[in-house]
Length: 291
Image (tube, rainbow, N blue to C red; front, side, top):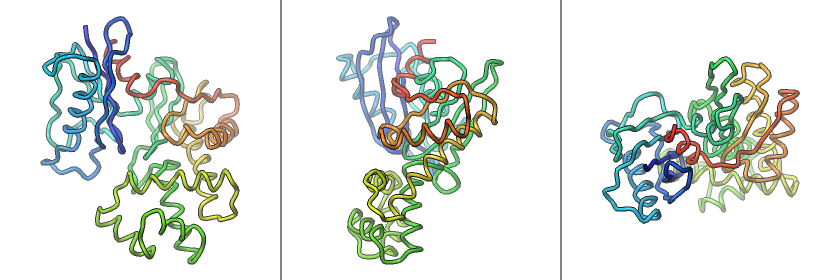
């Protein structure tokens, strides 16, 4: 029997193929897959899923016409429906869920607790011993994504605009190869700089904060982001003791940043155990596909 798990994110898509024994047979990757602002004609989600699964199938040395016994897809910001073109995947059992659900399956493996996604965007998902669940965040880059990579880059931009001529502004201009902050703003609004590309400035801020280089436009956003993610965890837990809080995503792969997130979360939710997820969300989706 063959199963697949897919993590469809704002920056990229990852697919994992496994069998009934729990073995992982192949991995593959595709492009961004979220449907923020997607029109009915959009094939963004469909293409990303098909590309990632095709590459995973090739990596597993399986035929292109391989049929799967189950596929679970976690989609960033999923609201229970597809806004673009329908998903086409080779299985009679395809389940689409919010990406926080597969992150939870990866990090906590069915145990109660909170998982917080901290990547290009952010969201949190809690499960409780009584079987109830709660989602916090996941409102997208305009109305939410608190503490995410995009949020850090946007906050740095806002602070640079407020401070005028500063090191933060200079680093932004150099990173995006533009001449003014207005030009940078215009390039983003016109779609010439994608959300994922803009979010890729966040590591510059993390490095500046780690080095304590003295520029508030660069150093302050990551410190604030750690507290924003802790607050997101608390909102998902509804201020109850969640027992465990796990973080997953590219941001918390940075040890310096994760330690600040750990400290902020322990302060906001005293008594909880703060973890960094070992399995990636695509593996969590694969685990759900087998269940």
